[in-house]
Amino acid sequence: MSETKNHAGLDGRHRDKSGKIERKHDNTLVSTLRQTYGKNFAPGFADHDKLGDVLKKAGVPSLSKYLKKK
Image (cartoon, rainbow, N blue to C red; front, top):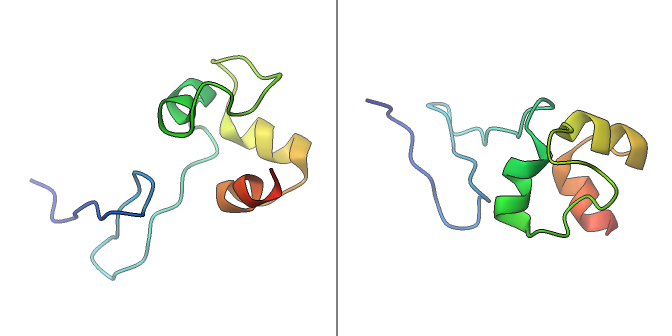
């Protein structure tokens, strides 16, 4: 059983044992992110595309920066 817990406001992420918030991985599928951020997340990308592709095209290093840029 995992010792980590999800907390409100973490967008599905969780804290590890040290308290650090885990980042979304670059290989997370756009379809998975659309379940959280809505069907209009990453327009122009297919469901099978990966977060890393979205971030690279947008020129940002992280999901949080991408969301702020929108």
